[in-house]
Amino acid sequence: MAVITTARVATPNASRYLQQLCKHWSHRFAVSFTPEAGEVGLPAGPLTLVAEADALVLRASVAEAEQVERVQAVVAEHLDRFAFREGGLVYDWRVEG
Image (cartoon, rainbow, N blue to C red; front, side, top):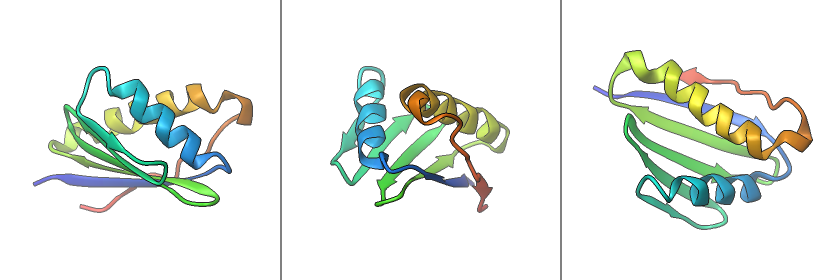
């Protein structure tokens, strides 16, 4: 059974980061996206992204519980690279299952 982990990351640039992340990962994984939402087929399980006016919502469905922290770290590391001008983003990861 998959473990769902979700974070809402406050940023006024959510759509831009969503598109950057999706374009970046499209070279390695199956990706689909619009300016408002995207999905990345990560090896550990799908990552969905939703751009809100003031935040980027990240939701990963991870196949194996022991991979949850690794997926969280990889997603945060990549987003932090694109958002370096904003300083430290805050990730409020929550595990749903």
